[in-house]
Length: 94
Image (cartoon, rainbow, N blue to C red; front, side, top):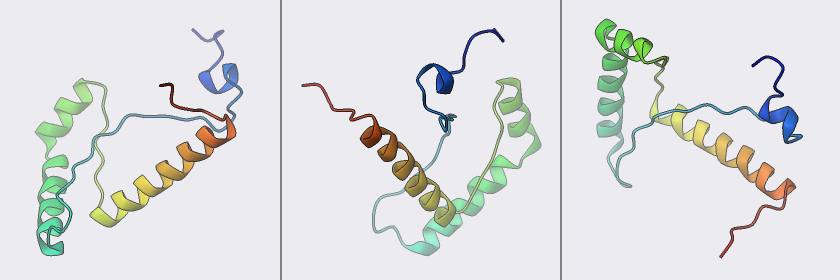
């Protein structure tokens, strides 16, 4: 529907951009070496051709990152959505 405005245009949110992602987490206090091993194995799986093909067939792109990169991504997302919530004075209805 090329004539329909994007959500960013319709809601007057010029920097609005959203995508879906899937992440993995481990319990707080998990030793770093365990996190790094899990990360390496997940990255290996995400680069396997058969898994990539399955994701592409579903219209999904595969990507992987390190635990530190994921933590930085989550901080950016929290800041981004926090700014939107504050700028629009969004409140939880009770």
